[in-house]
Every structure is written in C-alpha cells, then in structure tokens.
Image (tube, rainbow, N blue to C red; front, side):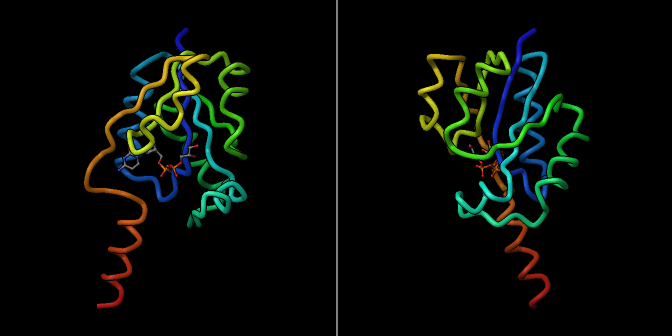
Length: 132
Ligand code: C2G
C-alpha cells in the first residue's frame, strides 16, 4: 500500500485545498494529513478562523483523506514519515525545495498550487464585500 502525507493549516477549506488533497491521494492508496494545531499556527504567524478540532473534523469528512494527525512543530516530519511508513511527501509548490531533506526518507513531490483561490483571498474579498 503506497502511503502519502501532506501538511497544512487547511483553514476555510476551499477548492484549492481539495484540489491538492485529491492529487495527493491520486499518487498512492492512503493519504495522511498533518493539520497545524492552533499553537503551531501561532509559530507560523497564521491565525485560523476555525479551531484545530473543527478544521480536523472538516478534513476527516473529505473523501480523499484517510487519516488526520496534528502538526505541532517544524521538526516532526522525519519522525512522521518513519512512524507512519510514508512513501510520498506532497506539498504545494509554494514550498518547493523547502522539504528536500525528506528525500532521504521518502519521495518528495511539490504540486502546482491552484491559482485564483487562497484563505487570505477569501478573507480580503469578504472584508471588501462587507465594507462597501
Ligand atoms: N494550496 C494549493 N493551492 C492553493 C492554496 C493552498 O495547492 N490555492 C496548498 C498549499 O500549497 C499547501 C496546502 O494547500 O500544500 C495547505 O495550504 P495551507 O493550509 O496554506 O498550508 P500552509 O500554511 O502552507 O502550511 O509544514 C507545512 C505547513 O504546515 C504548510
């Protein structure tokens, strides 16, 4: 069984996220998503609208997602790949090159980001709509 893993905040889940999750799942048979905790989001300087529990619950409802684990820090990826017997690590290509150290442990694939959508775009657009 070919196991895939990916990491992210996945706040205000949108079609760009789903597109990533679908392509990641299509690379193997099982997809694990490590979702950033609220504490780790602080380290990433990201404030998510939905709490960790709610972002996790939403991700678990996605047909492409088989397992959701917490992402607590930047250091856990090698341990995760080993412990979860991962074959392929996948991220959007805004991270291209940043996780190449994982190539000693698994395949590393950066997929093209979906153009035209992002959580910050949603927030900005909503602000504009509600403020004339
Ligand atoms: N993504 C995408 N297309 C978009 C928006 C996001 O392909 N239009 C991808 C990102 O490249 C990432 C994933 O969706 O692979 C999740 O995006 P975020 O929730 O923004 O994740 P990020 O904050 O980049 O966290 O350790 C890695 C970090 O946790 C990544």
